[in-house]
Structure formats: structure tokens, C-alpha cells
Length: 245
Image 1 (cartoon, rainbow, N blue to C red):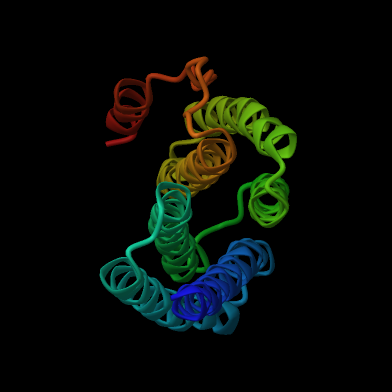
Image 2 (cartoon, helix red, strand yellow):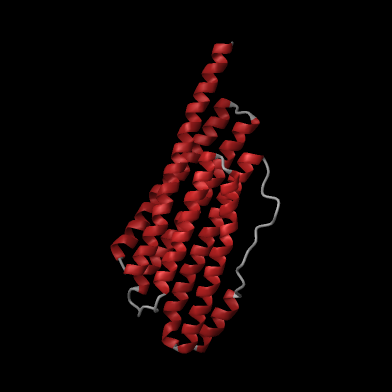
């Protein structure tokens, strides 16, 4: 009986190692997608943007494989409450990673459109810095998962405020450019949507960090997540756009 239990435990450990290796691979691909999409925007590299879009299929396939593997482990191994928490956390993390990959793909899609328009001074470089900060947050969130580091996960959650503030700054700058010259309205609208996508990436990274806190403590962070998006996006952007019509 003991030997049977040891065999089951060993098999579960192997399954769990496989799942964790897959989530880390997925995370690495998503990190690269964030960086490549931002670089393609700054350098107006259409080939790199197309590569981001193509690689998103790999990220989607990994999420599907992760979910299938997790469901199989739950069905066959009857994990304990703690082990089940690990599996459920990974499934939630993979869903957030897949969504970040989609947002990076959306960023890359707009690159082709923006290449036909005049560049807005300094905006692409700022968006790349913002994207880089989100990528570092994601790396730290994944490290926190592997290390079961609650403090690092909570630090990632707090850093989302910085991403919100960067978004707010860009939003105001785009409004200024649009008011100064109606010809800036279309490119600034596209750039704003890109900035909003990056800000939403930060939200998904924060959700991953919250899953790490849940995994380590068994509870979600008690304090509500502080959001610093002070813009009234639809109203202000639509108002400026209508002036250019």
C-alpha cells in the first residue's frame, strides 16, 4: 500500500513539474512578445510585428495544452487541497498570460497602420519604456511563483500603479497633440489604444501576482487593488476626434 502511494505521489510530482515547466515556457514567450511588439512600434519594423502575430498561435496552443494537462491531473490524481490550489492557480495564470499575448498581438497589428502616418514625437519610445516595465513585472511575477515569494508578488501588485500613471501621462500628451493639430488625431487615437493595451497588460500581470499570493497564503490580497487610471477615455477622446471631423 505504501509503495502504491509513493508511486502515485511520484507520478503527480512529475505531472506537476511538467505543468510548471509549460507555464514558464508560456511566460517567456509572452515576455518576448511584449518586448518585440514595442520594439516593432518604435523602429517601424513590420517584419517583427508580423512575427509577434504569428507567435501568438504558439502561446494559444500552450494555454490549451496546459488546460488539458491540468484537467487530466485533477481527474486522475485526485490532488489534495494544497496541490489542487497549485493546479488551479496555474490555470488562472495561463489565462492571464494568453490575454497578455493577445494584447501584444493587437499592438503589433496597429504597427502596419501607423507606418503609413507621420510619427508622433517621442511617443513610441515612451510606449516601449512602459512595455519594458510591464515585461519586468511579468518576469518578477513568474519568479515569485517559482520561488513561492509572497513579498515579491505583492511588490509586483504595487508596481501596477506606476503603469497606470505612465498611461495617464501618455493619454494627456496624446490629447495635447490632437488639439494642436487635427492631422495628429488619427495616429494619436491608434497610439492611445496601444497605450491602453499596455496598461491592461499590467492589470493581467497583477492578476498573476495575486494568484501567487493566493497560492502561498490560501487567500487573495485583502486590500483592494489601487488603480490610478484617472482618464475619462471615451468622452475626452471622442470629443477631440469630433473636432477634427
